[in-house]
Length: 118
Image 1 (cartoon, rainbow, N blue to C red):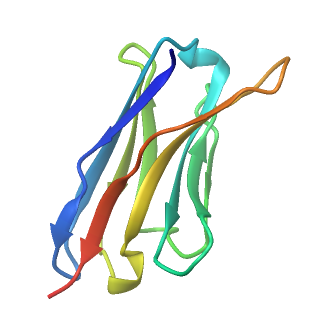
Image 2 (cartoon, helix red, strand yellow):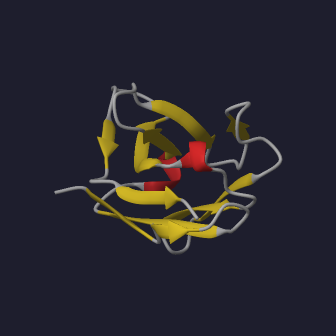
């Protein structure tokens, strides 16, 4: 059974930093685009950033210049470095895996909470 396990969330002050990790298991990691999405209370889930197996990256406009997505294919892990955090970044952050080829295949993690508050 495929598992995506997020870690690294928590409470941080505005302007602070956090690094999220997502470890994938039982998945052909290098054939998936990995991504981070977030959902704040009362709002729809939104894309934060994605990275292909070839390390092509895409970011939401709201996080460009502050967040960096990366992946380590040897560890089946994707990261999200979040700097200059703002209160509006507060949300539950979800890891996503989307197959790049062939039959549609998509997986989600359980989420990790990020709270930005003084």
